Image (tube, rainbow, N blue to C red; front, side):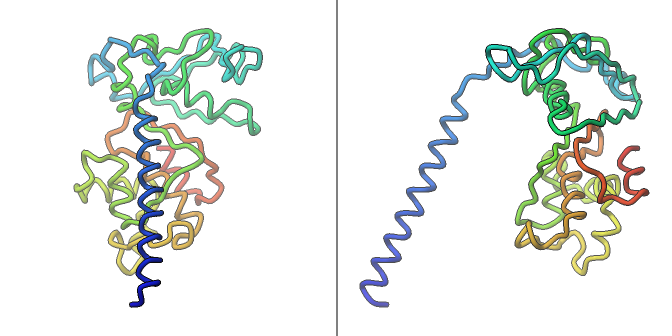
Length: 238
């Protein structure tokens, strides 16, 4: 190796290290930002048996604005109730507030006006950690990592990431069990290039894996399901 080549490689290494350090700095700055969502004090659920039939969700005259001045509302005076165990599909155009409803239920944002109830209890009084552990959310955007399919599924529920039986069940519930079993290396299939190694339909299944917890009480879907077969849609809904 010539001196010029060695110096060039050294320079490239320094540039790479500088970029990674800057990313770490940005990460720490983000982690140090105060949480504007005030935590509640009430455990949820107070009785685990209450979750056997799912969770009821009720919006009472809910309005929400992403802007501080509150002049432009994403939701305005919205009221509805979803009973325990009920399947509810919300259909609307882009920008109609479907995703906003999910972010409010999980308290990524707090409502501007009105009230949200989970099992009849004001959402703002409940412990954030409990609420977010109880509810799984699948947004339109998802991530498939350059890892094995087993690892991609397992990381959706880190506490059970090594439990192969639960991973298999999660794949079946997500409608991807047959697809994975058709691959030569099955769950050990390594995804080198997530955006190219799996066709879109399977990538959508990957998004289901990520949010699917085997012991879940309510799974909210916010995804175009046009790529799923009828049977897959039915399994996901159930």
